[in-house]
Length: 130
Image (cartoon, rainbow, N blue to C red; front, top):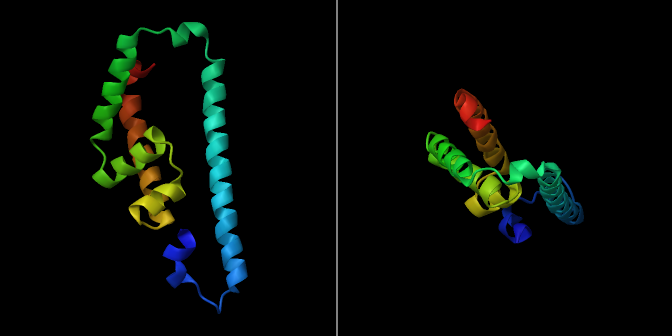
């Protein structure tokens, strides 16, 4: 799909078509690997949590979800989309770029900006988060 969609970007003066195809395939393979590794790290982290934390009061989880949703609303719509697709839906940044038809660098910049904005907002929530 990406080769078809990005065919106009191919520049035969920069590299032969074979090298261009290899680069695209390699990038997608690395994205998938990183995504799987990230999900595996999250699973290991959750598995390492003490059982007492897993059995926490469901009202606290609801409160935390509501707090996070409120903070997300303070982000721009484009930043919200990237955060939701990455952290709630589990898409890689490349997949998000493809879905939104935006350059990968733009998606990465939005994700970073959103996280930098969320960090002090959530830290400001103080004891409510931890």
